[in-house]
Image (tube, rainbow, N blue to C red; front, side, top):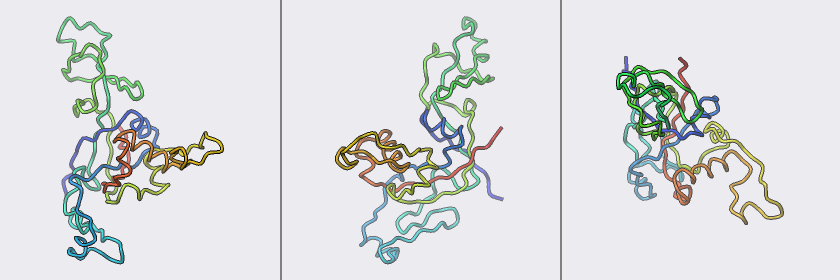
Length: 220
């Protein structure tokens, strides 16, 4: 029987809220390093079929013509524990170091407070970045249900919704979306905007190959 593994995964506050609401069941992460995807190279690998590339998973490793690697986030059945921005509540008396372990953890995405039994210190109530969150402080656990690879701009409207994005009407008049650089009134457009906000203004246009990780929340 395969061993279930746990790995950390970072989420922004907006995405944490979407996960907690049940609106986010997918995440896309850039494949590093980016593969060699020229037509010449794909033909050398016998992975070019009428302009499309071959994609399959073999023994847990991806064979996408040019990708021969394990997804670093795991495979179906593995678990992901969410790292998010957090703070230790400083409302209790901190003069006695022994009381540190009694201070609860507060999650900045939604304000939830959770007691913990670990000696974590106080940090004077200052917010802590997501990548500093240890396993014991995480309160969201996800089970991977599927992993695949695709290029970023291939995202469908349904998948953009599964990313936690919501279609919103354009608020401009007389000018087209193209004229003013609007991303359009779709969930895919909202995802385009979100990706650029998180990764930088030219990141969408780079159209990188990404791991598409589908998941469900493990309650309790």
